[in-house]
Image (cartoon, rainbow, N blue to C red; front, side, top):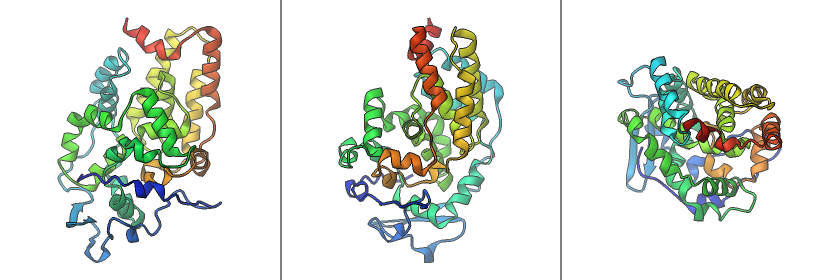
Length: 313
């Protein structure tokens, strides 16, 4: 979706958010550095993105974009591969693709038809390069969302570019349309690790399940719930534990219902804010049941992060 724009200035300009403010922060973003939205050129079904070389035009939703269809057998095939190796994140994408959010194009189009959607489309054309520029991100104050993101990604040995590479083969057909929906789908991919940080769920199997359950009402994709509940059921069968696995998942789903749709927020501005302020802003509480599960596992001598590895033996 065009060249990346990584600017340390954009993340250094923190935004003060008072009580009662909405999660969306860009406001007059069309007047900021990076060009204007040129409303006189906009058609209801088109997007513009201005840059030093001129203006690019994009359809919001390409007329040839196919309708989403369910393929349950394909989803089960990829799930069987995933349970043998949880690091194969491309299998998660394949499952979600096989059990898709059928109204994704409609919801993405509705968002990009709004002033705020067009503003974010202009300001954040491509996130991976921005997310992987840790030197720039760490210029924000200590305790910021950006610092928490860098800490998490470096600790886990992850990168936004790695996620792009893992999903590039599957996503090439989506990107071929060059429309706003493709940009929205890319953001859904790029925001996965951000949700981990915002919610406090780790990358253990239960943490991944809880992230999927948390995001279901934001991204009502049956594939998310399939992964969450299938994995949770497998853990209950395989693990000899008193940990409240089901309650942790139900809590995550309940917490996600009260959170605004994160993918439709300006991440460059949120990164400059304190992480705890972002959590408060998005109504994200502590994941008590998830923490309780880990406390019980420690008492039981169970390594939650080794669980999937044991299944592969």
